[in-house]
Length: 228
Image (cartoon, rainbow, N blue to C red; front, side, top):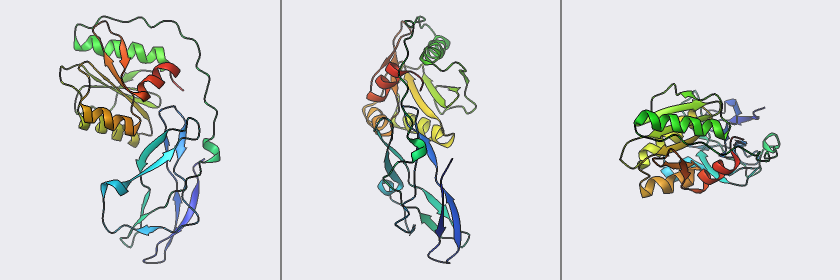
């Protein structure tokens, strides 16, 4: 259950009930951003990119993920930034499942963009996401796929995926409380790969045999463990 705490606006003294959000780690464990009961909310006077994010460590795999810093808008017009505790939620302390043995993946040769989507869908099913379908929201580039708790983007073009491509996928997944994974035929720009590592987005490159190859740490972990 999401945890709720009372929060008092320092400007108008109105009291609110704030419910902490929970986001999925790349390993599949939900990680709650727990309010720090020992510190009061801060009034947000101006925004800075570095201050808009908070790093929270996954209680299951230990990965440090960056999520938007929790905020609460008061009817008086004040925006409150909620302090976050370093302690993980007891509800989030779930054991990581032992990876099960899978039959070898059978690739599909890629000749067209449709083949790239088919190969990705088959690979995701092989990882343990049986309900693969077209995503409800169309991504800015490429083709979107979705499963329960997961958004995937397939880029079948000859252009390396950009920083914006990776961030847009991650932001869309975040709004849907889902994990995400990116598949590209042409690889990734250097800054896109660096940002994916920071956000915990698994990256794969599709070769023409139809085999997705992980190219960063989150991708390798997903390939090894499958769906959590």
